[in-house]
Length: 445
Ligand SMILES: [Zn+2]
Image 1: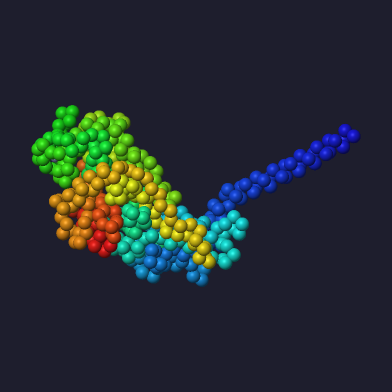
Image 2: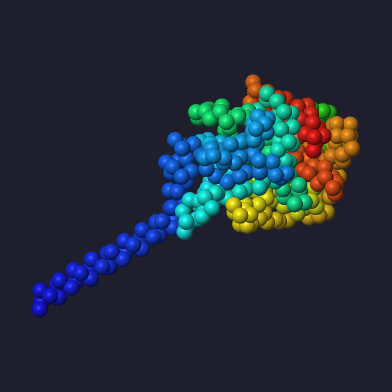
């Protein structure tokens, strides 16, 4: 009897272990199968580590950017389009980690838990992007041989119509890993010292926390702080906020920062997206950084004019400028318009995500100042037929390096509601290179 009881205990234990094993295995399939299925050794979608089978990727006009034909992955036949869109589309080896062919690989492969990779039709899902590939070509050509990025989106709908990055490469020529930043989507993964484009954040903070119109500071080719000179390009004398933004007076904005205080300016910066990880269609962007917790007064003064440790990510800053254009309501920029099954059934469509970044009144004030900048400073002749509002930046990046050139802004128009950011690395003043790149791209738009 005792022997029988012992034997049944063993059998019960074996059964329990067996059931637990099945449960664990099912859980692992549910959790990790997507990763296993899209691993480069899976011969259903890869051949010798190269992506061969996946759904179509098209631009906003239905132009094919990537597709599969006869078990071969193909791209648009025009080399300029291939090079201008590769950072969003992605390459065959997955070097561009933020590209659709990496970040949305399982979607493109048609992965689902029941059927595995590829649904019954044997085809993957299709992704329709919001990009206008011919505009991406114009922007890439405007950047030319210089490194940089251009991003443009519709601030009323959130649709990104242009992402351009240089240096770039032809995805047909699959190469080895490279160290020159060619695989980096600078728009999403880059961070730059902002220079004077940061004065928009300082201005917003002043509008929200002081009687900004009454602020008046003195500029004598800069201002002395802690016995050190914080320099300005001009001798602006007693100057108020509106003129200060038009003339980009460093002395005014450094003293405004000191009046606001570290925690107030940090709060404004964080409200508009600094020190946060933003996502474009679920793909993480690099963080914009604003940290003055340990800065002394002169360093804090520099931070208020976009120097010191300030860093901006182009996607984040474009979202902020778009909110100014859209009356304070920020619509998150996105690049995926629709994901459809091979039979054309919509699996996911774009959804607008809104955040109020500032009051309508303050957005209007910023807009008026940015409009004066272009009218009085850069010149409307640069943007024929368009009412452009903007701010340039020249980012000092070390004593012996040529500064980065930046320009952000938007077209104030009901039928062309586009906001833009242009960054051209090591190319001097923002009012020079970045402005002329923007002028070419907006003309193409
Ligand atoms: Zn000044």
